[in-house]
Structure formats: structure tokens, C-alpha cells
Image (tube, rainbow, N blue to C red; front, top):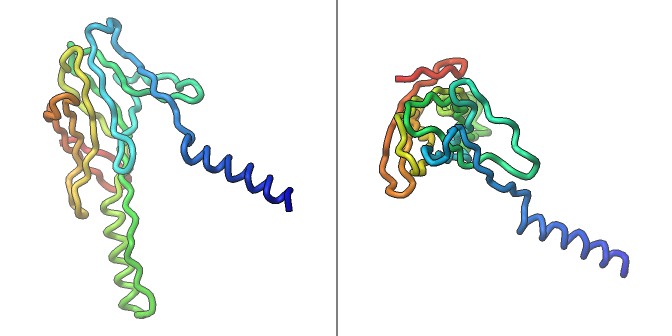
Length: 180
């Protein structure tokens, strides 16, 4: 009996620590700016929908050290930037109709088509205007509702929450992005 209690205590302690501490990684700034005083930082929205930074002008950042991730990214503030991003939005259908024969199959098929129309998984080029030196920005991906909902990349100032730049793109079959 004592053995089971000890084993339970060890497992419970481990799971509790994992729950409260988690598998978090520490953010580390990555800079593309040669002079840190003439740079601006951007934080990319993670999650669903979310963005992953890929490259700036074809230059990808190195893999971060174990236990860290790149956030924020610092960019030169005196020129326009062409940032390559991976945009993802995954919608799971909650509708499932069983027991209604052919009508249920038609409803399930329509739900699956709607789900596919809302999913986005593509690489997109974000044409960023010159940023103000010393400022911090957030870049988010917004997928409007509906099959034909618009896809937007929105750059906003973190301090004032003012939208600085907005760019729309379409996703066609195969996941290729077309910038408007």
C-alpha cells in the first residue's frame, strides 16, 4: 500500500509541475538591423489563426537555441520590407448528422466543403512600409467568417493600437496566396 502511495505522489507531483510550469520557451530577440538604434520590432501573432515568420528578403533566421524562441524580431526602420510569412487558420466542423440516411450524408458533405473553404494554410509575402525607429508593432492574421471571407494581415502599433498597414490576400486551390 505504501508503495502505491509513493508512486502516486511522484506521478502527481510531476504532472502538477508540468501543468503549472509547462514546456515553455523563453523569448529571445532576433535582429535584422545592423544598427540597433535604428530598428523597430515586430511580434507575430501565434495560435489559430496564426503567423509564422519565415524570412526577410530571402534571409531566414538560424534555429534558436534549445528552450528559446525568436520573439520579437527587429527590422531596419528606414526602408520597405518584404517579409515572407506562413499563415494558418484551421477550422474544425462541429456539425455531424447521423441517422438521417442520404440527407445526413448531404449535410455532412456541405459541412466538410464549408470547412475546407475556411481553412488557410499558405505562404504569403507581406509588403511592410518603413517602420518608425524605436517602436514596437504586432502583425496579426485575420480570417473573416464565411467561405469567401477575406484574409487580412494587419500591422498595428503596440503602444497606440493604431493600425499602421493592412494587406489583403486570397487563397486559391492548392494554397497559393495572391496578394491584392
